[in-house]
Amino acid sequence: MFRTLVRSAAVMMLALAAACDDSPSGPSPSSAVTIMPGVAVTGLFGAPNSRKLYRIVVPAGTPILTVETSGGSGDADILVRRERVPTLIEADCDSFNDGNSDGCSITSPVAGTFYIMLFGSDEDSGYSGVTLLATFAPHG
Image (cartoon, rainbow, N blue to C red; front, side, top):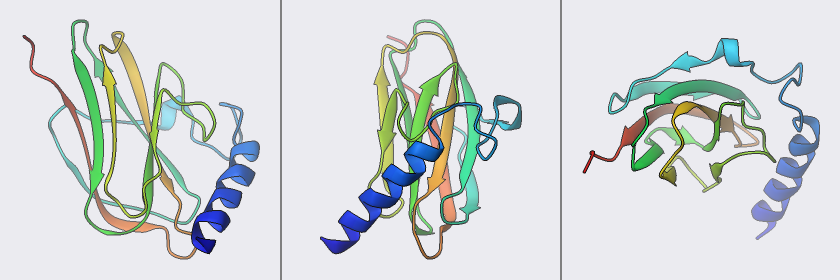
């Protein structure tokens, strides 16, 4: 319970600091690493309160975009947003589970570039050894 309260307070403080997409301390679209659907990105790591940005292009007619993290240690959370860098308060989908089993699914996404941010939310150690995987549901 106490960890949840402390975590919520920390997320709220960071949300206020990161509310703007052009925050000087946050990632910019040009820093995003392009990932491909169905290709796992492994060995990811980040410090506490870090924000690492990835992007994936979603074609028209994609029924579902799913973004998941798994493995490793610490706590990496996911935020996803179409055409703009997600923030802790502005995202189309987010997952703030404890540990690294997080996931976001967006049904019938509008075609375009989706930005995926991994947020290192573990107050003490960040995260390491995490796998990121984005997939599209098969076309009907």
